[in-house]
Image (cartoon, rainbow, N blue to C red):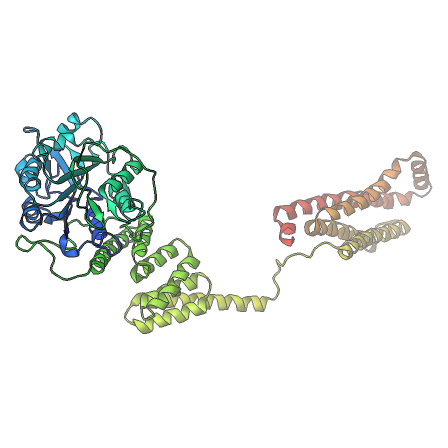
Length: 595
């Protein structure tokens, strides 16, 4: 039974700056390699999958690996998958297509992989029953742009290569998608290029045969054609004699078919499989991961299981993303740091460093309760971590739980007594506690606050206000009577008049300030009664009697003048002060606080 062999290449950065740096190429290669060897994915043998990226992806090494995979060790019933994510270009002099390696110089095409030579010396000569070449490239240089008819037209790049593969050969196919070009940047989703992200989605279930569970190139192509836009719409070029099966048993027979473009059919579907795609770029492109091949022994002989290799990839990716998150936090780019920390936690929900960073970021943004929930989780995961207890102390102190905060920072100091920052936090908590205690003692000594909430208006308080108002009028009447009997103002008369007027004014202002409009109505009513007494002098018969009394008793003139003036003040002043009290009470919100 035949084997499945894979050579997966991804290059983000190039020595020649003519090739712009890419964002997702290495992530895409890593994601595909992970899926191929995953026990819940492609189930390919890890020893048969080579993954090369970054500075290791030189022309010399890639040519050697291609020769080894496709010529030296291959058997007639084997299937080979070649995946390349990076830059591709057309030589301006010869018109031939090239794949750019890490050490490729754009002006020196001899430093790149020559596609016609790849087809003539590798694909045509290989004994493998099936070879699938997936090109997920950025279109670089002006020639390709001038010759292509559509954004995803790979004919200008591959035309000279396809002529090097005789028609009677076994299945030789190119599946091509454009990552972008000088006018269009790469498009990504969840840390992968859009083409690879949708490919992983299809490989995780939607592209599989419902009956057998196998995934063929045809079914994957149909899924991609229905879910990708114009820039990433795949092209399928070449000749297929037997169906290329990516999972399940390798096919042995099939009606031969040549392809220039397969029909686009099938509805868009979402992935339901167990595979989790990487969610962010790992930053440095200068490391080769998975099974790095050597020219003399290109296969992985480490004996690692597929699960162990996938675990290594995820661990490396998690560490790289976490380093980026911590760097973003140091640069005070809190939003990016928070996003990257969440990406790490998607890979490993119990990554303590990511949880700690997320808690710190939430605390920085004032979300103390959310941060404390994460810290409580960390206390369970790492009870001996002093940093966790320190963060717990800071959060509890901000939430007003000073005694638990003090206990937490004491625990941090017990675990790491050499950290001066912990002592600073402890002093801050102790200062806060001392301030709170001193404030509580002062309040106890001062007794009830003078700014206590005013009582609500009720019948009792209304009746009391009415009695005070009437009492003021009675005192005024007593003062008027004494004045009339003594015929001249004396100290006793003035005392009663002043007390009566003061009671009327104070009661009107205070009642309106505390209780509002109801007291203004009461004051207005009494002011109207008092004003009516003043206005009664306008009644002609009463005027005649007053003038006659003054004529008969001239000594009544002064007392009557004092009586009129007091009545006029008693009618006007309480009313005006009541309106003032109502206005001031509204401004300071006394009645709003009471309700």
